Length: 623
Image (cartoon, rainbow, N blue to C red; front, side):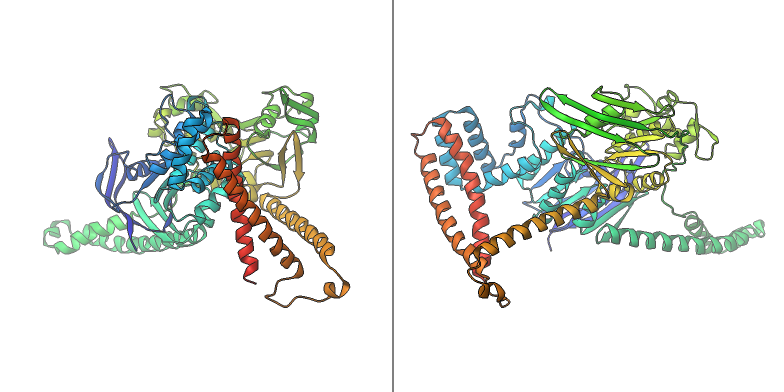
């Protein structure tokens, strides 16, 4: 099996801070690898090194001829470019032909469009154009004429992801690819990567991705790299075994160290006569004895403000941006200790709803807030800070002392230590922290206010997995009301009692269950709808009771399938004829621009429908 990437003795330091030292690993063709490490351990730096964007010491070899694509955590675009120019920025020949076609299509220049279509025909690029359109649609990429400078963080990430996927590189480097994607997009991306032939290395906290598509896991732990062949569940099991075995080895070394220490202390004046090999061995044993390993995790023991009987009451609440309805006649009374998950496509009103709850937006209708309510709002945008601000300064702006879960008062410096910000890091500048460290600091500043109504908008973005697990355990015991928006299905499944499903047009469905329950309901509902339609169709097609009563033999086409096969043959013939007509129209050079645009859009739909009907025809023909 070909080595796509071979790294030997990779090391990286920033001044006195060593991120990692002498890392050795191999990525083989076909491997779907995830890199797991705590925030601040150097994951993003390692990805930049592999992408050729960061210097390092050591050796890095990429298989000759391999194309490498990199999705950074924070995408960088060319100033002045539009979305269209960024998506089609690849230097590949087919991509350039497609870019010329799209540009001519948008301009309405008939002569340029005719030439572009000739090049598309010659390059046989129509199928590729269809795949590109599907990727752009499924990722919700914004209007191609928008300048990239006006895009939000989520839109920038989706544009960068679309650019990478349409390039179809052999080897993908993906740094937090699911950030800012909704659940439907996340599941589509997982399915896309599962079906693609690409080899990839991914940094992600998304355990659904880790479990469903990754075949290998690399763990960066205290400057050492450990490799596991399996998914996330396998990794957890084997990691625990590794730590247990390592700690047992340390325990044995400590017992031996006590004996050797006693030997070293006896008769100091005779030490020169001691065996030198035993003295050397003593120092090695001492190092082993100091090697006790345990995962450094956040310690969340913050208290909750007293909770009254009244939380937030919404009565016939509505809100719209012009004619775009975000919320329509919604009534709900939040109860003590309930945990609500919020899901829905981007743009259906989730953020608007959160801003209504927190008073940032004044809607029509009634919003009543309890007297004892203390809201903690963790925003998707992350922490706001001014250049030159230090970690400790941000925390002290909120409080000098923090009330803990047992009622005790904790100095803010000690509280930050619980969140893995030791004293030397507390005086670091916030803008020097990694993305994950900023998220952890933001979480600390929200929780230190002791909220009893906690709103978390995409809290899993950029937090490492160990921190997520600790946060989940804290939220399970949280003595308040929790409202969480997340694309992390593991996070939702573990925490929420029910869901608010934003369906668009101001409609919100209250679903009793977690996200997996909701997915099962949708699949069950879809299957029942299909069965009902099939039953109606079968009844309409059965010519007599005798035929209806007779069960088909296994492997044989049913009467309904035979009729479907005949219809498919007719449909395929019609589609082939329409395809030929459209191709002739597009290449004629005499058609006006409006008709050309319509024909170019229609031919994509025809090709997709033709593929689907042909696949089904082949399936039935084999019976």
